[in-house]
Image (cartoon, rainbow, N blue to C red; front, top):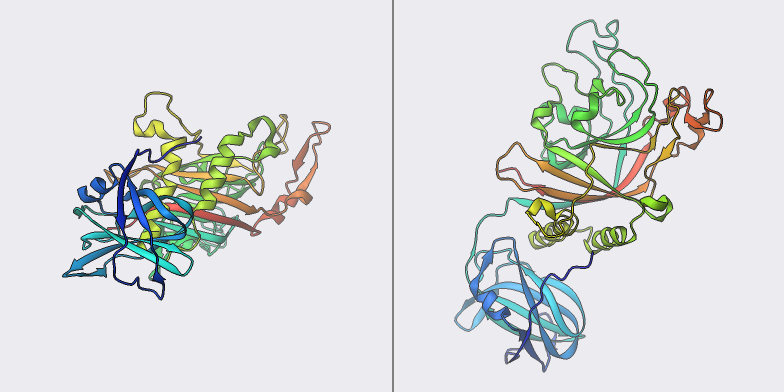
Length: 426
């Protein structure tokens, strides 16, 4: 799982801080910066908009921060054109990424900070070209709920005698990786009523409570309980969310509008043989390295890049890697419990719990040329389903979710922290 992003040999080229006093209320720091070999040439070569350049070298003094900014030179002065990308720094070895968040910059400003003092250096920047139609988002305390059966003409014709009529639902039960525009706000945890006006465009996953077929009201036998599922699986016989794809007044959750999305389970040490310590440590460390607040375009570019490590490290077969490729085990669903229904004779198995991660991947897009996008769901707290378990009437010692008690599991909050890449609508 260990990966070196930039391995560049050091070159003894020392630059001295400019004579101008640094801005921001800091005194001048007497320091030099020795860049790694090839770094200055890479900056001068330019970079694609939204992509990083490695700023790597050695400072003559121990540092507390490095601030990287795209600036434009006019005469003897420099004006900021991009955001100041402030990065924590310890010691003398500088190894940071500057993200090209502006096309107007002529130089990259590197400010070395040691406490209350700073030294500033400028490096000529080549052209920043291209487009960046992507982004990243975080939902640090997202609440999602398994929706009850939505009444409509198919499952309750007495209440809704006219075809294509029904109650609809405001329950936040869907996740959208790219987001859905609702009243001018981009939302990523959405309800069926928020998806219907766009006929499901942007829907990625659903959180459900498996109990019955919501079209003919027949109860499902072998499976029961909470599940994260992709959109095409909503109507599967062991899921039963036909009510989510019913046509309500001429609008319905059209699977053709949805990107094909998959899930990969990253479980903790509780899972025994299913636990991969290196994999879990990688995902956990990556997740923690991405800040929850993304206040600038540069913040989003950095988060998007970091989330790309999922593909580059865990799923690089998608990049055409032939020598020892990695590939995530992508599934269309993960159940909280498998074989928890009353007709199942197999052992009931737990698949995930609070503290685990789910990697989400959008791996096929209706729009040609769009890349794969990835995200990480950290499961903070699942609804307590313990009271719903009873002993099976046919398999001694086997615990199942009682059909009647399963009704009490609807509309309970599930808390998630999500960090995700997205494609921005053009």
